[in-house]
Length: 270
Image (cartoon, rainbow, N blue to C red):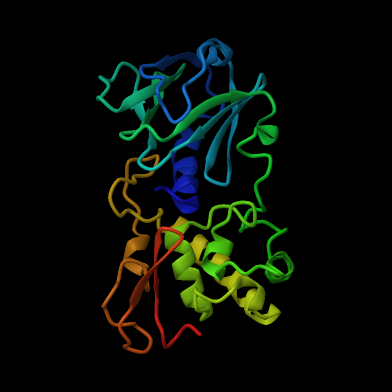
């Protein structure tokens, strides 16, 4: 599933091609995404000039004067630029056609993504209750420590909760906890403030490095420019079960938490 770095990479990839362009048409070939694409979405976007492209959590926001196209890539979705009229593949469900002769194409093989139009996107039910951005000013160790008080859930599941902090998916949660030296099984409410300072810093660092590397391509992800992400080469623990820890040579362990596989080093993470 594309996580925050992959979505931010996509945003940066498409931004130069679509900002300040006018939408001449929206072609919806299949409305059967995770939530059906509402009829009338095309007419509400047609003729609008794109003012900016933003990201909130794992959502892309294509902003116009009349409202916002709110996109989620789901598990296998991607957005990229093609020439208008480029033949569509079986999984190419939506084209946003531009006056430049280009089109923004939304591909989603498993159809778990979404495409909405909203005049108040930050009040949309999918965004309204989200936690702070991990790269924003509101996120730090003090915030995590305060939010974790009394929480019995594991720290791994705690930081993956989008109402606590957005965009820290499975890959980057495992990597951040390793960098901070924290055992992912520890209860969130039993971790000291100083360790949350380290964890907040690790989350910021891991996500920033992943964005610079273009995200992590494990199977399906490609950025808005069609290039794969290269952060996989920097992964310390994720998907490295029974391989040697690069710090201490202990074998990396894999466990299941909340139906997701967690990878960690028993010696480095306490």
